[in-house]
Structures are given as structure tokens and as C-alpha cells.
Length: 200
Image (cartoon, rainbow, N blue to C red; front, side):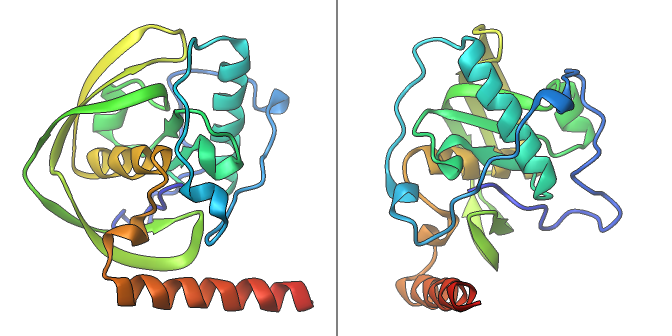
């Protein structure tokens, strides 16, 4: 699921951000986003053997999809692709230093420190928000969009977003960090909404 911009200033939008990696948005596609309780969101993704043109196209399409949905992060399983690929663009100074938007393959957390509670939402769990405790500081190793090794340290919102998206690659939604009762209530709401939409 893609992380929504919860806890961000109201005057900061996620679509229309200036990116340090230019790309042709006219050549990109908006992909359908899976929503819970779709069973595909609970499957584990496979590692990317090489970041080639096919994976780069996927990354760009994911970015376009994320921006269109006002998200700040998206994982490939959310668009029905079981590959270890995520994209992130939180649009703040820390992110700009990391050359956002981030397009990452095979991201792996190699260090975690501290605890940080954060109110999270998800594009795959629409209209639902809950507080999740994440690591305050993380280090990640991954491949970038040029198939080059990348090592970065992230804090605050960027750390939260990366942890959220990496969870998706292992079939974990943010609601899986909640109590069984809270998770059940949210899933019932989503099932009810899906049933109502089918009746329309």
C-alpha cells in the first residue's frame, strides 16, 4: 500500500512536486491500486534480478500512479506486481538530499534505531488512519533505477514511509501492526464499502 501524507503540513501537496530525476509523464501510465482485503496484498514479492528498462518503466508508472492518488509512497504489490520495487517522494529537504523521487529495487533495512509513533494511512487501505510505532532512524541498502547499489539513512517521515513500503514487499499492511480488534473493524469497513460500490 502506498503511504498517504498523514502528519504533513496542510499546504504541502504530494502531486506536482519538483523532482530531481526528470521523466516524461506523458509516456507514463496510471495503474489500478489494489485495496484490502485483496489477497494479493498479503503475498511476498520476489527480488529484482536487474533493474532494466522494464523495471524502470514500472517505477515510472508507479510514480505517476502515486502522484495521481496524492500518495507519497507506493510498492509494486499494490499495483499487482510481485516484485521488490518501491517508489517514494515525500517532498521535504531530507528527501531532496536523497535525490527524490526515490526509485528502489530490493530495499533492505540493515539498521534500525529508536521508536517513532506516526499516524499512517495507505492507498490500499482507503480512508483509514491509525498510529503505528516505527523505528525513528533506519539505514537501507537497495538498487537504484540505474541498477547501482544505494545506501541511505533516513529519519522521521522518510524513515516511516520507507518502512511502510518495505512492509508491503513482505505482504504486511500497516493495519497488521494494530490490535486484532482494530484491524478487524477496519477490514469490515472496507468490505462494506466494496459491497456498496458493487451495488451502484
